[in-house]
Image 1 (tube, rainbow, N blue to C red):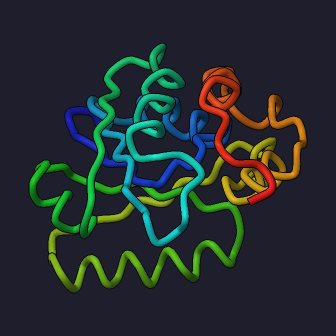
Image 2: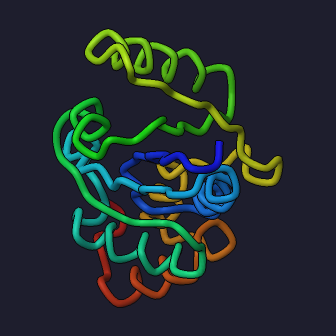
Length: 164
């Protein structure tokens, strides 16, 4: 798949070690990887879009051929505008597959050239989900082993609401 561009979208609220693992693996398969931080306002993010972009950039700084952008709106529009070859989605469990399959098929309906490639995370990250990380953080738990160091550092600096 070398010579091609992959788009890896997500809210990354916050980015986890599982996300970083996938980006490292994607960068080994594609010449260019665009990590697209989605606004995702409907999900009630812990961090602002700008904060998420910052922490994603810091967390992925050591990985070659990776570009970080933000976007609002439909993923299919970003696919078309960025002229990428595929969208990458991570799958942890069968429940992820059912949801991601529906999204992939809808995107293909909206744009027939839209292709989705599913990748599984490394086994050690199969349980990791940003929603769980946010809950642990909000309840005062230690998330240091679940997220890149940049996340912990920035959360301490920004002090987003805990318990909310």
